[in-house]
Amino acid sequence: MDSLIIQGGNPLRGKIKISGAKNAALPLMACGLLLSKGSLELTSFPKLADTNSMATLLINLGLKIEIKNDNALIFGRPNNFNAPYDLVNKMRASILVLGPLLTRFGSARVSLPGGCSIGTRPVDLHIKAMKALGAKVKIIKGYVEAQAPKEGLKGCIINFPKVSVGATENTIMAASLAKGETIITNAAKEPEIINLANCLNEMGAKISGAGTNEIKITGVKVLLGTKCKVISDRIETGSYAIASLMTKGELELNNAEPLYLSELNETLLKSGAIIKTSQDKIFVSSKSILPVNVETGVYPGFPTDLQAQFMSLMCIANGKSEIKENIFENRFMHVPELIRMGAKINVNGGIAKIKGVKKLNGAPIMATDLRASISLVIAALSAKGESQISNVFHLDRGYEDIENKLSNCGAKIKRVFNK
Ligand code: EPZ
Image (cartoon, rainbow, N blue to C red; front, side, top):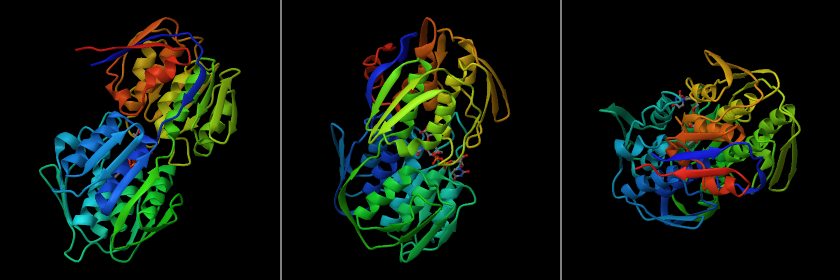
């Protein structure tokens, strides 16, 4: 397992080009299964371990994928509808092939994704939606086995008792080729959902209301190839913004979308950040690091995917702060590692209480999940001395070209390839 060696203490100064969003690219790739004709071309496509895993799964289902620079071309027709455990358990978002396979081909057998270190990650809301659209769904030996009626899925009203990004995305894709109209209430409102709906509409779908909590989909007969740009990654943007503050640097983030980060910007401003934005640029520097209390919430609330990164920043704030994690039941795996670096954090239930210290110290630490790993990189960049972060395969799932992006801004970071 590879590790990263980081010599802390250098302020990050320079420019970072933000990549396409992992969490937009994954559902967009699944739309390739809906095609009746033509190909789906995704531009600003991020080359990540997770998009690689999704590509492997789609190829396993029979699609063809050509990736050149930051373009992905998806075409062809599935020759089987079985998403096996060994592929699905590597990347939970594989469950997003369920809706497209079911609505396009009437059948799907998708392994239950299984949990990950941040939580059990159930898919009951995905299954509830497929059943509501008329599918017969059974769980057999760890697989979701779904069968649409021979006349196809039928539109209906689906009210989610809990906001779920993935279940909203699966339902939009399944309803796009169902007969009649589907209304989703209590829908997730992420920018990635808008990106998905816009791409599907370019393919011939009829979707309105994406980005609000009520989305209407009128089923159509066929969906055709198109070209669609993956929106910029708001979580990568927020991660590097926080890194700029924590290292007392000054970063210009390009290909960013300030609109997607209003809640984070507000929080960072309260913590003493200086933020200037223009078109697709965000300039982030810091005067001082003030303590701010934060609660994660569904979009547009404070993103759970930035909770670990913000906690790193609060570790060196001048005062006490509290962070409440409301979305996932176990998303504090970064805490013991930050404590190893000298942070003062107490966790009780879903609340972490942090007492800022002057400086963290470099140490050997371990990445446990994607966002915990970037929070440790950010902490190590600001710490005194050297840190060695193991298990960085977690990082490669969601941060494209991270060593170059950081070292071009003055970071002392190198990867050690362990056999
Ligand atoms: C998406 O995951 C993102 N992943 C996650 O990002 C993100 O943290 C999450 O949304 C919340 O914003 C992708 O888009 C690929 P949910 P998803 O369904 O869709 C519960 C990252 O770091 N739930 O919105 O899996 C669930 O347990 C990743 O990039 C059910 O109870 O999240 C959680 O508590 C991590 N039943 C809450 O809902 C279900 O059927 C929100 O989950 C589905 C979810």
